[in-house]
Length: 397
Image (cartoon, rainbow, N blue to C red; front, side):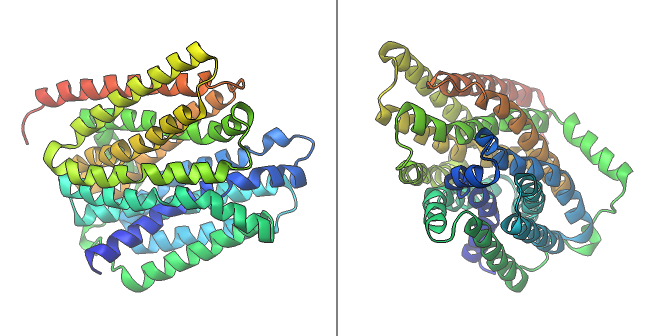
């Protein structure tokens, strides 16, 4: 498999997550109307159920891939994802849909986490960060088309058609993987699946100060992303009365922010991961502060100002999350699967726990959303500055 095909396949594995989240956004009102009409506010639980399942699955997929190999775990995860999608498609109650979404999330953790371990098997350092950035650039195109694609599928086949699309997407990706990607973890480098060894690996990770600080920063950056995903549709509907055109705006803004990962891939080898992350967070602090000030002055910021700020939130994700993964995995190459699992699980579960109550604070204005992101960006910036001081004190390897 050539590099271009490898990057495309890894991007499709990553895209399982974005497609599973963003394509569901237009379906929430229809699902609420059919399955939970007495409590329509429960519909967003469909999003958090998937994230919860993904976080839970992330704990196991990496260690399993360190023991049984990368390909088998990715294929098994895809099988679980397809099963969850089929159950949701056939479900007649809201509770079954939630359970199926959790199963979907557990299955999706396989392609998401093990893809990082595969990349780490083949690349390291800034070259790894470059590959991850290119993968993330392609990955960020999915949110640009997923809501509109979901809208079109719903118009023709109802909300159940979304789950049929998930099944088709996963079948295509797993067949591609099965046919073209060789195993990247040789048998002699595999680790037995023993609780003692797993606990030792986790202790080793959290004992390393750079890994620990990068996980904290990544958790904050993912909290920013989850928060805007949870609150952006109510903002469009209640603040700006743009519910009908939401999928077009969301897709267009996601498309505008997609070059962030390409820009990161071009700059990371020259300037380094830490500097780019710090600059991206500093810009987020300044822009969020400006939107808060503008909102306080005018009562409600003009829509185009909000849309530009939303675009930068997505843009910032492309400049930070891939680099933070690379920073955390760099010292952990000998336990890449376990490291990818712990990093992904902790950052996803904790970020979801942070974002969920913030979403409940929505009061019909921009203040809860923009204020929360301002605070999280500020905290992440402080952690990155501290990481630089800690790194300067560490002995050279």
